[in-house]
Length: 167
Image (tube, rainbow, N blue to C red):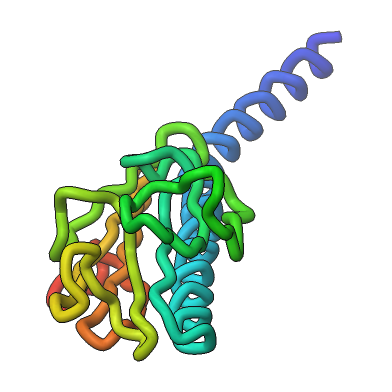
């Protein structure tokens, strides 16, 4: 009986120690999945703008916040939010897990959106001549990842903790 109690205690301690190290790894995998889906949605929006010959937007499902997911849509009234009558081309497959922070540093910092014109370049909603470029920082627990949207519409992913100089 004593041996069984000791063995059970050792197994419990090893399990608790293992679970503590798995938390950050699970957060990292969730963050990778989230950033990958956002990157794919950005690429799809850009490709659709080029293919269709007019502006296509990546919009949050709930106005002003990426926390409820996003969609690629034709924002006909240019209000940077999804309205009932607007054509949705794609909805995000991944919903951000609880505790996820998504902060944007874009040219047009007053609104939450990314818009591409028919040439595939990101544009602000206020002007077809002003580019909408910058970055979005995704954070879940201690894990961080950044999507950088360039002047020409190219999107890249970087790790702000590892690639400090280029991220």
